[in-house]
Image (cartoon, rainbow, N blue to C red; front, side, top):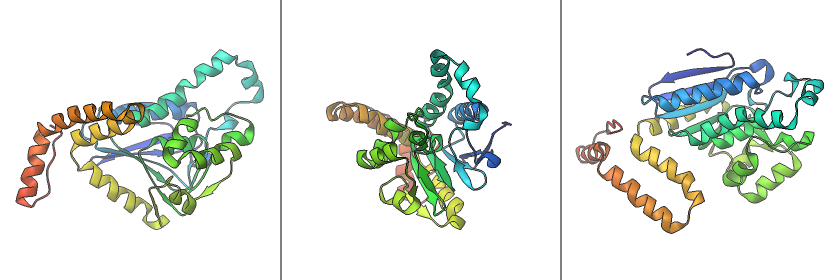
Length: 264
């Protein structure tokens, strides 16, 4: 499948989306929003994919929204309702990432700013190199973070650090990002792809049903009390206990061999 602003590659149960506007530091325009939404839908439907990795071409992960794509006059010509409807694109991207049934990993190779930071935070896991740096850029130009940052940041890094980033617009460097939990893992730039794909491969070769249910409850559990979560856990565990994957996992453990999960 060909796209104008991104690349989608699938190999050994791993799908990789590469933001591909390196001349603009992979800044997001309307075409990229449409391309990402289509690619995420494709990955979600593909039973041959077990995990998604998203990264950027060149020296940046994503420099945020492409503010140069529209003149001040064009912005002024849009009424409030047109502006509100314009956020359907960002909503499709962020919700598409966060609701994707397969685990997602952001491979952060460089600058990760504004909408780019929100996309990274919408992923389940973030691995970065020492070249990674992060900023909530919206406040620097008098804007509210309309890509979901106020919901995403505190869940990733806690309220105090989220508040600091939202209110100041200061950069956070890679080492501090790892310290506060924004990065799961910090690796040398030369090892970034190898380390990310190693984790992606471990996840992709895991039991699809169990992982899909675990991801669903990881986020749905934020919206429910413990008793409800326990009841949901019992239902999910019943599904996995009666699956062919569970039988295969037990047999593989007994035979001391790698399991071959089929998602059944």
